[in-house]
Image (cartoon, rainbow, N blue to C red; front, side, top):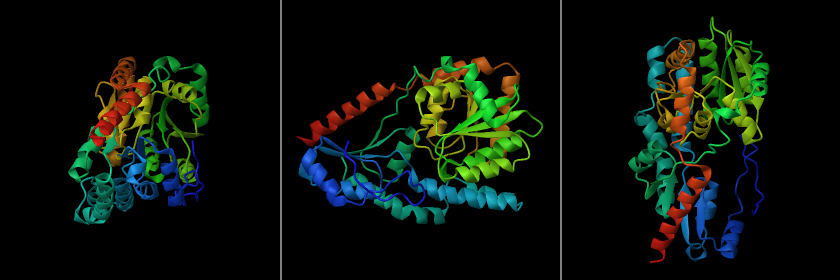
Length: 362
């Protein structure tokens, strides 16, 4: 592990920025890695692309954040919410549409050009979901390789459920013994659309005993807590960052369902782990998270459509009332079992790298 000093990110100071490109080049020359991975299309890419070709075996572009469509999508979603609040439903639906208009395409064009330029100088671009692989190829990205992430099936299992973890969830939300306990998992950043999740649960809870516990931390936490406090219905709690997979697995397995609002996931690791723990999920019909959807184990809804999200939550609750909870849990577990283990995913990536290196040395 080699650390380089860098300034904190303005939005989230837990992230730091690469600025010493000279140091990156020096480290590559000294270590001479077989594989040089680029994990960001911004400063990390600028530093890695300065490494001499003779100082590494192959270079890859790891596409695990759809930053281009995400932030344009956040802007669209914000406009849609504003228009919906003004009662202009038609305009809201147009703004929220995930198929970008000419203006959105024009705004994203320079960013996609930058990404294509990075990919062109790499031996492969790795992505975890079929949705993202198709998108990258449609935008002309070179040498796209899909490799799903792996999950810890043994840790994230229904057997992780405990009375103590369920009591903790109830306590965080101030929920009753008989409440339906929903969870949302992720970094509390604007792109995760957790304000959208809170609004949906708040509406779904009208006249119903529903509670939501948000697992995670980030720069939006204070704003999200304030938003939850204004909801006329529902109980809300914030667990903060959960430090440990066993603890996270216990909280997931001890809840009743997971609700997710972000339609720009490149994979949806938290959804996969929740399903492995036997948790039914409600996910949007766009993005990597949608690929995990199985009608037997959960519900889906039109991405960024608040009314559709609320209806999906209510369908989930109705299925619980109809006695489907155990069958849904088993279906969720079975769907997650189709994914590789963490070790299996790592070994698959190493195999990809061996292949790339064998071709690059010919």
